[in-house]
Amino acid sequence: MKNIFFFATFLFCFSAFCEQSVFLVEGQAGKQIGMTSDFSHFTYLTEDKSQLSLYPDISSDGDWVTYVQGNDKDSLQIVVYNSKTLKKEIWGEKGFILHPRFSRNGDKLFFSLKMGSGNKIVYYDLSKLRTNNIPIEVAGIKYFALAPTLLDLPDQGYFPSPYQEGDKIIYQKNDSANKRQIVIYSLIDKKEEIIDEGMAPSLSKDERYVAYTKKIENNWDIYVYDLLEKTKIKVTSHFASDFAPTFDRLGDLIYCSDRLESGVFSLFKQEKKSWAQQKEIEKVILTRPGVSFYAPKISGDISFEQKVEAKMIGEPRSSFGSIAYDNKIFVVGGHQGAEHTYPPESFTARTTIYNFAQKKWIDVKERNFKAHGFALAAYNRFIYAFGGFSYEENNKPKWKSLDVVERYDIDKDEWKVVAQMPVRRSSNIVATVGSKVYLIGGWDSTPKFPGDIDGTFLDQIDVYDLETNSFTTLTTKLPKLRRAFSSFVRNGKIYLVGGISEGGTHFNLIRNLTEFDPATNEFKELPPLPFATFAPAAGLLDDRAFIFGGMIKIGTSEEDYQYVRHIYQFDFNSMSWSHTGRYLHESKGFSQVVNLSQGLGILGGHSYQDNSDHPLDTFEIFADHGHL
Image (tube, rainbow, N blue to C red; front, side, top):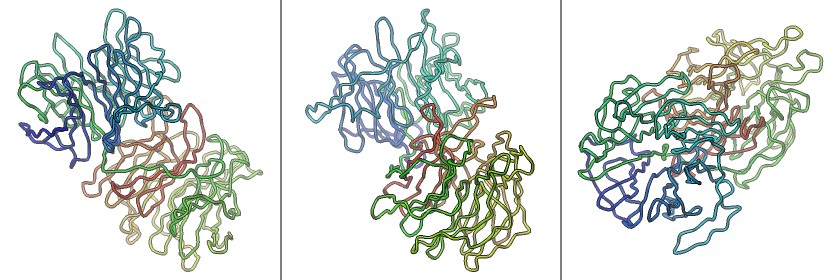
């Protein structure tokens, strides 16, 4: 492959080269695919002048690139290129195929395929690709014979832009009058929502915005639609043609325009703070006389690695206690079954250990109390469990919070009660600083009267001394009542993330990132999360905090809540939030994060994936590049 080095009019690099970008290059070499990490130079992924190579896309981890290639428009095939192994695969038959796009989780590949008199949106189920298909290998290229699944759309479709789950897509709809519209289509309930007239839609990494191009008075400009606020803005207004918008992980827009040379397209970038305020402050990031750069697509942050480990054993559960200690992971208790249902069998006391040396899970002695919504601490060969949400036959509703501290002796494989907590508590955080354990937030769910589901939210901060097995209560109070939130410890300070505020009859999500300093007993609010959420998972790598999944509000009705698989990061150096452009293995909340030597382990959780309601047994690791 040839490397072509080129310096644009304005040099610009993406986020310290942590993203990969692909695009169409059209010039003397024909239509080829280019790839770059910084836009100061690029590499050709294709070189055959006799072949058309069109409409590339790249996976969120940057490992896979897809595009269509063929001798002419009716003999195009889907090519999938692995940027690590440098191997190519061919998927499916030849035809008039356009716009292949990976779903965020990589489980599906959507594309537009000519069928009969028009193009339809279809997809390949990639989760079954290598288990159900035996490829034929010719000259080092694997050929997979695949049959696509057709989406039941009423009109022609182009430019599919799938959501994280692959359960909804945004695409360009061409009706019988050849009118172009931007449409959101649900694969679950078969409903469509028309956003606007236009073409070539692209979904932002955080799935809040749609960018597309629209022709008004014979001029093509870029527009952005806010899926949450249901508003749209025009973000370019040049007399030249602006096409093919896409987003990077920071929410900045990258698009092509022929404003530098008529009929020849260069790549431009407009930062989010510019387009959101309609300032049109643009930068040229790639241009060359006589050569067009078109249809850019951008990966997520490739400086991270993700790996799926062995699933937890036994019936899947969520809201369990977990901690990493002595090269093992301890998982205790949890909730089994559908969400917000609490029969006796939904509470468990199971204790399970993952041994990294043996790469396996084993069950050990159960905790004495069946509960969920509690957290753990580890110290001097002991695991401590604090309180929890438990079943109580005599209450209405039939639940309560516990006030016991139980200790698991790793060497003896036994649990016993070692202390009583100052208050009943569950759905709180447990943070260990030195030999002190801080119990912050949560609630006493025990009904105050028959039918009470609100319980009592707690502002009391209790501190457990691991040396003396005794409690003290601080005079400092939690300034904002919350439960179902997460936390992490950095430099001796405790950070509280998201959650819900008072009231069991509704979800009142919060977006606070709150710092608590045990040395001064002072609270401080830091820049809030990009979204309000509860039941997220949180962890720390160096000077960056990461928020995994959680539940967010996606609409205006009381039912418009959804678990997500987004991974956001907070940089303590710049004190700012950004999307990583990376995603969990599945959408979920109530996952637990444990600190591992190689990164962060994300365990279990609860999900609505595949139109269901169930806990998860998955275990994945998120780490800096080169640590896995």
